[in-house]
Length: 367
Image 1 (cartoon, rainbow, N blue to C red):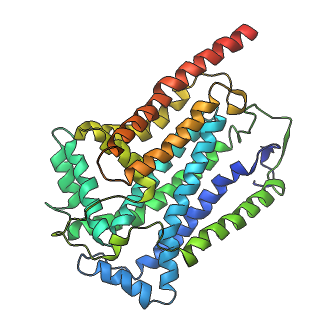
Image 2: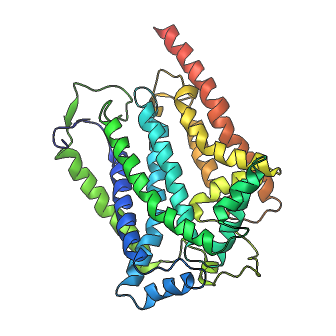
Image 3: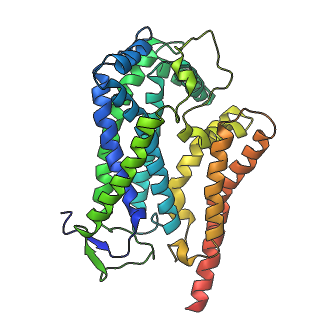
């Protein structure tokens, strides 16, 4: 029961992002179902059906803007939720499984976001789908077959759009199921806290103390969300997507949605296509191995002065990768992207393990 769920008394508003992610998921599913009632997954009708929703359906413009901007809000909340987990060591024992399920949710959400980006069938939708699906062609031996299966033929066409629409409708329900499992598994070890220590004797009921905090967070978040919906509805999108898809005209600069840009920058920073694809997926999958890479006896970065500056440099590095991903492949963006990519992997594979061992040796000497 929510009312009897014991929670650490010192958790802050940073712990509200889990609830906000759940709210975003519900908003996306509800608005997505309503939009699907008017959308036509056909290459000749998709763009027109979106315009029909915007112009002719009662409050269709509101549904579309809430859904489109809701995807961006969802990723903002997820990124903050994950960075909080990284800072406070929420991926360490006994919450490794909770963290791993969260990473799978992140992957599934990215898949849903990409699939949804294709559906308006604008210029960026078409060419984004073409570029991203072609990446699977780098897989040895089976790459070409995988690409043709994704396309449903020999090019991005009607079969592709139908598949992507079906999958985009289905994947959020997988995310919802995984989110339920995420919550169930969290209730076993219970929530982490800013101190990173177990607080069995210093717990209070979740309701009403933390439900009030979550309600305030929801109010503030909705204010931020609706500001984009009503005043800047197209700020987070790409203007080329208001041009109907044309296979004969390639946009001068093909970019995905902003929340994919850091990983897109990692992909482009490596000259070899296969190595770039491996690095892009590896940048996400490395998160699954964090409980093994960090063997520190201390969870929270509050008590890790050696780790703290590297973490904030990692956060800044993520913003730099996002900026690089939105810029053309030319000097000096390529070189900056390569440095930022190198630091991204160094943080997880070298810096974290070394700092953890240093901290553990210091801790053992003190004891």
